[in-house]
Image 1 (cartoon, one colour):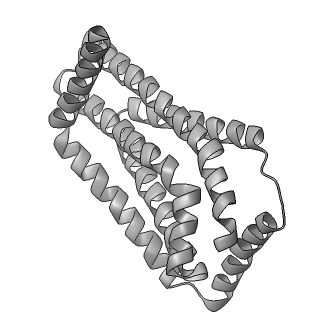
Image 2: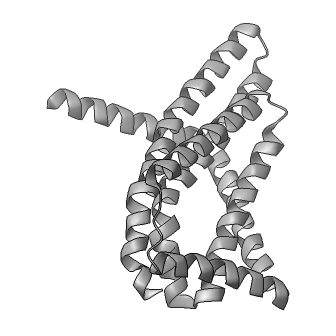
Length: 214
């Protein structure tokens, strides 16, 4: 029991040290993500009536299908979600490892923020504030509590790799830093797989439980 507590405390301390060392990078990436969210909200608020009608049809059709007894294939959803997170982690690792790909990494973060802002804003615009928040909370929120920090951390890891290589361009240092970036990315992948499990077996069940209130 004591050994487990010691291991947990060590991991916690490593995470705290990592955040402290890369605090500025975390702030920058988080701000870019927030800008993406704002742009997503702004986009919804400036949609034409025909675009809004198409969005309304899509959301209401999905909700009505669930109300009418449509089933969700959990296994298929899990495969798709894990596959998506595997691809996402690989892209973030690979682009971050190229050093010159940091702007692309930040672009991905902004795009993800845009998608989240778009989803929240569209849910509220179509379903109303109460139902929109309920829809978001039951279907999207929980997995994103894990996904968003992992995405930001992967971005910061790429930035750290870039800074380290710029300071010391020796082959030995580059190999060490790429190895660290790789191990960190694999560590984040574990949590992203956990977010896939939550999306498949927790969020979908919560949505089905609350679907009658939407």
